[in-house]
Image (cartoon, helix red, strand yellow):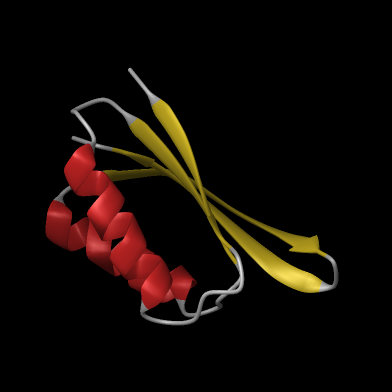
Amino acid sequence: MAEKIMNLRGLKCPLPTLRVKKMLTTLQSGDVVIAECTDPMAAIDIPNLLRQTGDTLEARETGKEQGRDLLTFRIRKT
């Protein structure tokens, strides 16, 4: 089981979602990807993507980094 971290800070919609989608196609079942985003639209787009792909959103956290909101998604490939 692998765990990959994606730094998607500074990317705007739709790039964070497209990159997560591409990463998910390279993973095996059970692998985890942690996507770190600053685009507020990712809070809507990534969960919608996971509803389409059937993968699991295990956790979603919000925080601050250098004055910007930081969204962190923990996604398990099914």
